[in-house]
Length: 105
Image 1: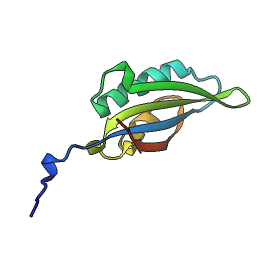
Image 2: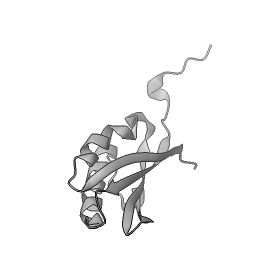
Image 3: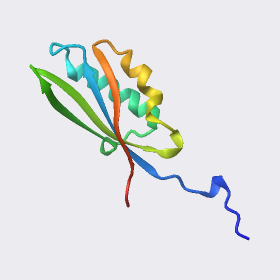
Protein backbone atom coordinates (compact mmCIF):
# COMPACT_ATOMS: atom_id res chain seq x y z
CA UNK A 1 0.00 0.00 0.00
CA UNK A 2 1.39 3.39 -1.01
CA UNK A 3 0.92 6.22 1.43
CA UNK A 4 1.66 9.74 0.28
CA UNK A 5 2.13 12.36 2.94
CA UNK A 6 0.99 15.93 2.27
CA UNK A 7 4.51 17.23 3.02
CA UNK A 8 5.88 15.06 0.21
CA UNK A 9 3.49 16.43 -2.40
CA UNK A 10 4.88 19.34 -4.36
CA UNK A 11 2.28 22.06 -4.70
CA UNK A 12 1.73 23.54 -8.14
CA UNK A 13 2.24 27.13 -9.15
CA UNK A 14 -0.90 29.12 -9.88
CA UNK A 15 -1.13 31.97 -12.38
CA UNK A 16 -3.54 34.59 -11.06
CA UNK A 17 -5.08 37.54 -12.90
CA UNK A 18 -6.58 40.36 -10.88
CA UNK A 19 -8.36 43.49 -12.06
CA UNK A 20 -8.22 46.67 -10.01
CA UNK A 21 -10.60 49.53 -10.77
CA UNK A 22 -9.74 53.09 -9.72
CA UNK A 23 -12.33 55.43 -8.23
CA UNK A 24 -12.06 57.83 -11.20
CA UNK A 25 -10.11 58.49 -14.42
CA UNK A 26 -8.07 61.13 -12.55
CA UNK A 27 -6.49 58.58 -10.19
CA UNK A 28 -2.79 57.97 -10.82
CA UNK A 29 -2.64 54.27 -11.81
CA UNK A 30 1.16 54.22 -11.52
CA UNK A 31 0.94 55.00 -7.78
CA UNK A 32 -1.68 52.29 -7.29
CA UNK A 33 0.36 49.85 -9.37
CA UNK A 34 3.47 50.33 -7.23
CA UNK A 35 1.56 49.80 -3.98
CA UNK A 36 -0.33 46.77 -5.30
CA UNK A 37 2.83 45.13 -6.62
CA UNK A 38 4.46 45.48 -3.19
CA UNK A 39 1.43 43.84 -1.54
CA UNK A 40 1.46 41.02 -4.08
CA UNK A 41 5.19 40.41 -3.54
CA UNK A 42 4.64 40.28 0.23
CA UNK A 43 1.71 37.86 -0.18
CA UNK A 44 3.41 35.53 -2.67
CA UNK A 45 6.96 35.77 -1.36
CA UNK A 46 8.15 36.15 -4.97
CA UNK A 47 10.41 39.11 -5.82
CA UNK A 48 11.38 38.27 -9.38
CA UNK A 49 10.10 40.71 -12.04
CA UNK A 50 9.11 37.69 -14.17
CA UNK A 51 6.55 36.77 -11.52
CA UNK A 52 4.32 39.75 -12.35
CA UNK A 53 2.96 41.31 -15.53
CA UNK A 54 1.02 44.57 -15.59
CA UNK A 55 -1.50 45.69 -18.21
CA UNK A 56 -3.59 48.83 -18.41
CA UNK A 57 -7.03 48.04 -19.82
CA UNK A 58 -9.27 50.82 -21.18
CA UNK A 59 -12.79 50.57 -19.74
CA UNK A 60 -14.84 53.61 -20.85
CA UNK A 61 -14.82 57.42 -20.92
CA UNK A 62 -11.11 57.64 -20.04
CA UNK A 63 -11.39 55.17 -17.17
CA UNK A 64 -8.71 52.49 -17.18
CA UNK A 65 -8.36 49.33 -15.12
CA UNK A 66 -5.13 47.92 -13.76
CA UNK A 67 -4.73 44.24 -14.64
CA UNK A 68 -1.95 42.34 -12.88
CA UNK A 69 -0.98 38.77 -13.65
CA UNK A 70 1.22 37.06 -11.07
CA UNK A 71 2.37 33.63 -9.95
CA UNK A 72 1.97 32.13 -6.52
CA UNK A 73 2.27 28.75 -4.84
CA UNK A 74 -1.09 27.02 -4.49
CA UNK A 75 -0.23 26.35 -0.87
CA UNK A 76 -0.77 30.07 -0.16
CA UNK A 77 -4.48 29.54 -0.66
CA UNK A 78 -6.82 32.04 -2.26
CA UNK A 79 -5.55 35.35 -3.67
CA UNK A 80 -8.68 36.88 -2.11
CA UNK A 81 -6.60 37.12 1.08
CA UNK A 82 -5.03 40.37 -0.16
CA UNK A 83 -8.30 41.96 -1.31
CA UNK A 84 -8.84 44.02 1.87
CA UNK A 85 -5.31 45.43 1.74
CA UNK A 86 -5.62 46.40 -1.92
CA UNK A 87 -9.09 47.96 -1.63
CA UNK A 88 -7.78 50.00 1.33
CA UNK A 89 -5.35 51.81 -1.01
CA UNK A 90 -6.51 55.36 -1.68
CA UNK A 91 -8.01 55.62 -5.17
CA UNK A 92 -8.96 51.94 -5.48
CA UNK A 93 -12.65 51.29 -6.12
CA UNK A 94 -12.61 47.49 -6.46
CA UNK A 95 -10.48 44.36 -6.66
CA UNK A 96 -11.55 41.28 -8.61
CA UNK A 97 -9.84 37.94 -9.15
CA UNK A 98 -10.49 37.40 -12.86
CA UNK A 99 -8.69 34.10 -13.41
CA UNK A 100 -6.75 31.44 -11.51
CA UNK A 101 -5.12 28.48 -13.25
CA UNK A 102 -2.23 26.10 -12.78
CA UNK A 103 1.01 26.89 -14.55
CA UNK A 104 2.20 24.29 -17.04
CA UNK A 105 5.85 23.27 -17.21
